[in-house]
Length: 257
Image (cartoon, rainbow, N blue to C red; front, side):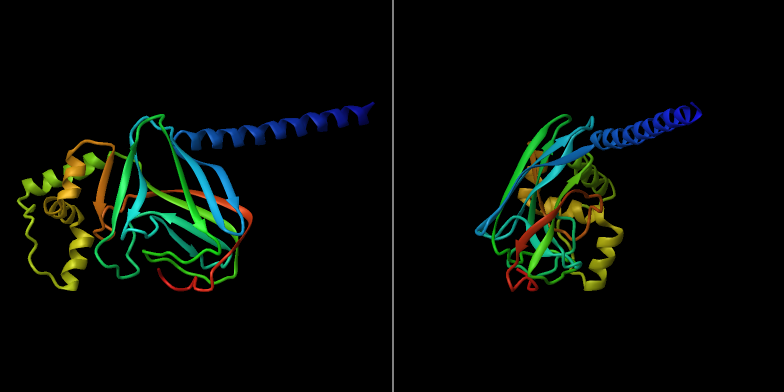
């Protein structure tokens, strides 16, 4: 009888512990859902291409801005692809507030789109197989013949990006520092300016770039931002990680695009 009571007690304790673990998992999930989330909706890998689809949802109570493309030259992909240093993970990245790794003709520009509270946005990309290296920004690079893990990274701003830019421009104007004509600067001056006076740099570029200015002042659903170095320092990252994949890589994966 006592053994039966002990057995029932142990079963009840196990159920309670299981319930606690389940509750903790649900709580963590709810906390994650309270912000911006990304969900995989399709993954197709064959001998010719990799197709990846996802959905981003804004579960917050305010607008957020998602990095929707990186514009370089026509025909170049609007995302990066590279093998991570662990030699396991193929990183597909669409972020912009990063240090440029290669010298590109022309300039880099990003397009951020607004996602309002409770709004969803679908995204997709297609990558030819074997995967080739496509890299615009600095990253720790590995070398491997196959990727066993896939990581998708999408940059976003969890705040009013348009309002932030306009406020910087307004403050620079009040400080009489918004002159669009930038005097010649040496490398050290540029580094100091970018590090300690990023708002002034943004204000000057704003006044000197018609596409940047018009996209911000136009009040539309997108903002076109030219690359100014790591200026904003507020871009966050949505990440999807998929294990158990087998993606062949091109032999030139150690070279920048």
